[in-house]
Amino acid sequence: MEQHSLPGSPPVPITLRRSARARRITLRVSRIDGRVTLTLPLRAPKADALDFARSREDWIRRSLARRPGLVQVAIGVEIPVEGVMHRIVPGTGRGVVPGAGQIAVPEAAAPARLQAWLRERARERLTAAADHYAAALGRPYGRITLRDTRSRWGSCSWQGALMFSWRLVFAPPEVLRYVAAHEVAHLAHMDHSRAFWAVVERIHGPWAHMRDWLRVNGHELHRYRFEPPS
Image 1 (cartoon, rainbow, N blue to C red):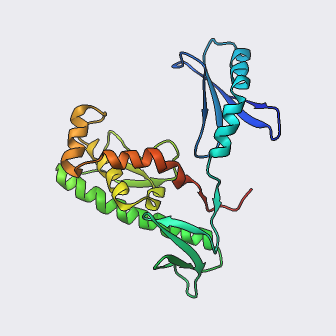
Image 2: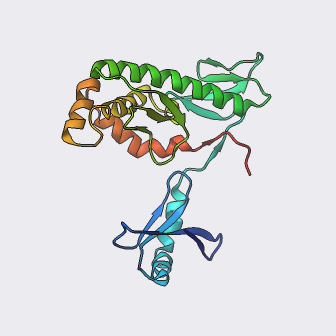
Image 3: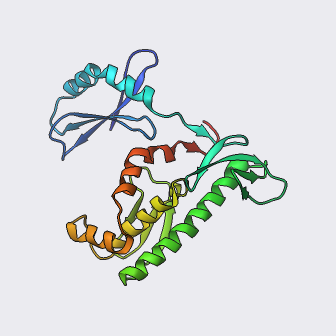
């Protein structure tokens, strides 16, 4: 990968990436982190790719301007928990205490404590959902791991290990359960064939509106930052 930029105010960093699978020059602006990626075939001239990016500068800047801003998690900020917005307020005890429309968090290291609490809540919800759908399927899974992934919400390995993004705890519960059912269904079919979707339908029920919710709103779940700004 190479780093370039479009001049202007402000300059726009561009990551140039060659791909053996690319058949033409493409440009992508990530809705998650605003990264601009210029992908080109292995033998395509770099100058042509950069010219293409310059010709689309107005589109790039409009896309970046429409992207939701990042939210630095702190006392007083609102975050979604299972689809419901909660305001973070100072807590008097040592633990995180959820309430009606708010979450009380000890002020010392509040973002880190809240993130740990959210990850544990995500693990509980995802484990319960995976257990339910695995029982409905009649196939056990290996283990569950949580990560902060950006390109996928979950995965299932050939060994039956399930991986999920802990940020699913921000989404409505039915969306989290759909992702769990989706990955469990891969225990039967490691593809997205019609047979796979039939399994999802059988163990979960209707699923299309949950998938659509993620396609439309999923990038919003990545807005929330718990690390100190660099």
